[in-house]
Image (tube, rainbow over all chains, first blue to last red; front, side):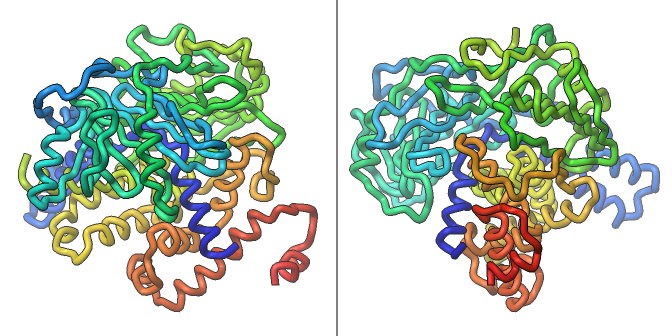
Length: 375
Length: 174
């Protein structure tokens, strides 16, 4: 394996399958401030008890404050387009946008659907992503296309920041120059990508994937012009269903893969009352094969258990600064599926109870799958 | 919010995807990558004054991230375990998912420090000296870690995982 092959390998691995970010900049600031206070307290000779409280606070063991809204502010600007209608929130269960046109031999591969942003990839095969499409819901980005254009004309270096989910960092793009308009909308080049405000306060970014590929501007413009908006794709299908969970819980984001005529959800994150953004349960479900295996991070408490007749490994990992306590249940072979359920931030083995009491396995046969992962 | 916080938030927002991807290549798990980035940007906040005074904030942030990764790998709980012990030499399956899984598995088979060296050299496009700075070692060590890392990756991606001794494998790869 030589250097170009390694570069290609890294591009391939890093360019696919990214779920919606769980990184919380607000939480980092909060914990960072606590650590700074702790350092200052130690340096200034604050009594030991007070320092101990600060230390617990900095490590996250003492109450974590509610997350503020870290999303970018909205800027109003004249409406420049007509359909599709602006939408402030997507359904994570139905992709909102799709590649309407792709070069010959290229097809949809994977995607991630969230409430405020969606990301899809396409390529000639699963090992090679050559196109990506990101779509942001209305009001999640901090600039209008007119503002970006004015900054560029003044010689500025605008950054388009779009918040993916409340309290999460989202995307940051640096438009470099104006591009040919996309279906009448102002557009901008960002390296090998083109960004445009597809409807009021709503952005899309599409382009070639990878930094070491030759750029084909005309092709990119054509792919951009073909993007379709409005949740016209079929709903995602799931080979499992979770039933009887708290009524306030909902699917927050889904990572899916295209194949066999369906868009199969293979990982989803739950949100709802009592679930902090950094402690949302995550369910990973794949079609089992002979090489299926589980990965986990043993935290000193990992044991084989049979749950509902299925061989699993239950792992508990204690929390620490920057990461919450974790319970994970993993089953490499569960009636044709490979399953993992992880819950965070709680000392209760919630993942075990979800697996035992709420999991309904539908199996690998697509005719049995459901569009409602929460029953 | 203070201007310090504004500046920090703006920087992190702009670099988030790059940090996440680098972290993902280091640990091959998006969830874990987010944890790594979360821990790294918390440290970056604490040391923000020093970071923005540095010649390149990106280099500083990358260094924090890589150190976080290597520090974490040294702790016992982070060791990855395969439940059935048949992962590292698995042949690529016909399914898309398994092919990607094989690539991830191959990268996971490269020892952490060598993996970090490869990621810095071939994904972050750092030269030998810059990589040495991030890792806190000599350029010579970076070169040897690169060679060893490439060899490990090559072994893990070996398309013929038939039974063979370590000696046979070594001689076949020269």
